[in-house]
Length: 88
Image 1 (spheres, rainbow, N blue to C red):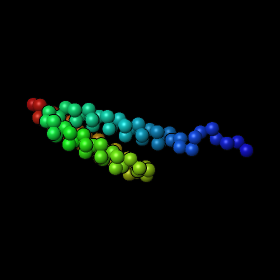
Image 2 (cartoon, rainbow, N blue to C red; image 1 turned 90 degrees about the horizontal axis):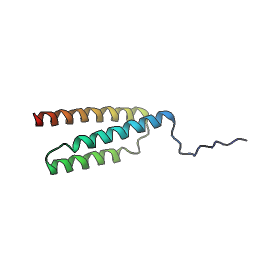
Image 3 (spheres, one colour; image 1 turned 90 degrees about the vertical axis):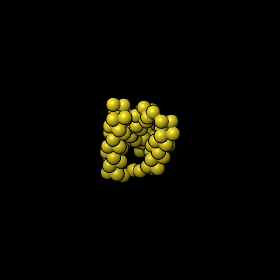
Image 4 (cartoon, rainbow, N blue to C red; image 1 turned 120 degrees about the horizontal axis):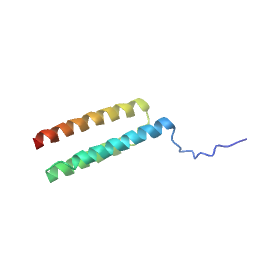
């Protein structure tokens, strides 16, 4: 009987792609937060982002992960708009 050479925790292609999307979103959020001029606001937003991602780290349902990515992208766009308005 042949056994699989893959470790038991290997991600499927779909899971791998979702993971990359989440990591990219996290990086983009942190990059946007670095542009916040106020130190205390920057720290608050960074802590908020870190907690949100930690809280949802164990999510496994495909639909809920997709929904969270969509919500995260909308929040990122809102933050970017706010920063653009603050600069102008």
